[in-house]
Length: 232
Image 1 (cartoon, helix red, strand yellow):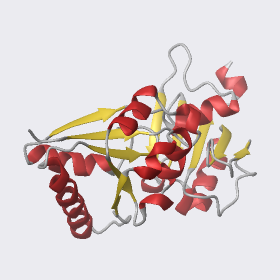
Image 2 (cartoon, one colour):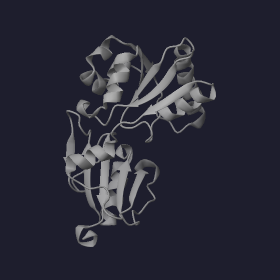
Image 3 (cartoon, helix red, strand yellow):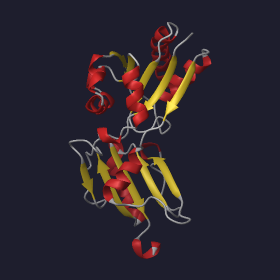
Image 4 (tube, one colour):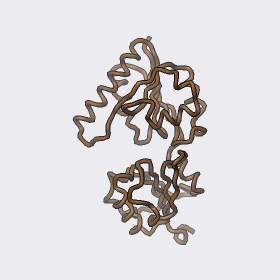
């Protein structure tokens, strides 16, 4: 019997937002994979370890998949990650791959899962609370009401958007291009809130595009709503 690969979302940052299922799977299994060059230094580990102290005693796999736009290098990294995980799966051991937020939302884990499935193994996705839901709750912001549309964009790849569609925009992955993203937000006339490092010790909340620093970190989540007078 081969083991099963589980892609487990640990939520956005606050350990108490981890699901009971995520906690149980970590406790019940020995092999835990984490996305980064040093497993114990990853954000996912730091979140999960606070909720599941037993994590420190598990066998931790460092799955290093550096961010790159080089398709060939990206594919090579994903293949190497799948090779590493397969060595445990074929021995009948489950592998719990921890990932931030929810594994179905812009998660690098999905590229590895596709390769594992193609090799004939089983894999399951375990939902986690998304960063945009957590940020909306943190700021008391509704994402969608009645018939409002909700648009989720990886901002760093969509700098040509003018945010002109009706409804609410969620901008993810904004950190490296924050100056350009801020200009788009200002031109849109939308009401803006941003949470940086939501649920973490170094969390910061900004209530307008003007407040957002150009050097905001990678874990920055922006919610841009239609102006209140237009919305009302």
